[in-house]
Length: 117
Length: 110
Image (cartoon, each protein chain N blue to C red):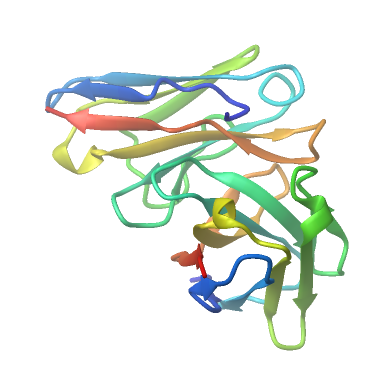
């Protein structure tokens, strides 16, 4: 059974950089696409970015200037960095595996990141 | 504002059949498969339907889905109290080159 686990600080100050890691267990990270999605409290889902295990990246144009996604196949994890955060970036951040037709078959439990001074 | 349009709420009584609609455009639903996710309170979304009408292992066949043109729908038959959750539709968007989601439909079992 594939499992994903997000980790990182739960509180980030405005203008600083949010950094999260998603550790994958139960399967190799190789051969798949991996994604970050976020959900502001009480709101819907928003795709942030995804990455192929080889390192090819794709970003949501609305966030592209502030986002970096990376992968470490040797340690079976991938990461997210979001710079210059504001209160609008407060959300539950999920990592997920992306299948070839675009659906997300495995999700992490999510981690709440609050942007506040 | 979400790219795909869903009704914000739906409701039904136990045993009933309810449907949830999802409207998109040619860059997403019309030319790409639709998936549906169930999000129980306080939990992560869970894949319910993929590739328009396929069930992942473990999902009961009370859940079914269809697509026509730029719209899709999820149907839940034999409604149960444990079906009370938020439901999201999703599809790949060729313009965005990424997945897009509906705003979610909160299903209440009366």
